[in-house]
Length: 147
Image (cartoon, rainbow, N blue to C red; front, side, top):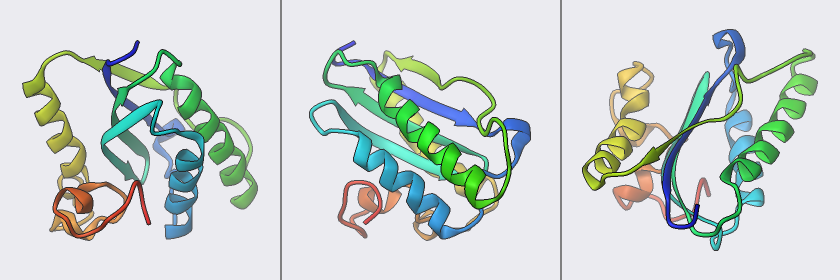
């Protein structure tokens, strides 16, 4: 749906960690970056957490959003299972999404996504969590996704 804004998220199966080390986070983000096109979507907020992820994105074309994420998630699951010598599903369910219909909810959603690492006790200061675009919001990193 062109022009629509979505909260996209998913959790790992059985709440296992999706990311054990820095290379895991960067692999996921690099795969995502390779699969998306600025003409297709705009990223408002994102955060990768140890056992789940959140993205707030605007869909610029009618191409289904799940196609971009499915390619990324399938590729990451193959990489993860190979690297950690495991088999089976990595994600608990199909990609979850909610349509954002109000501007005030959009603002709250972006805050919620960025505050996830602090709320989970992973960092005291949000600027210390590299796997979100909070650093771009506060002008301490210049990039589209992780650079």
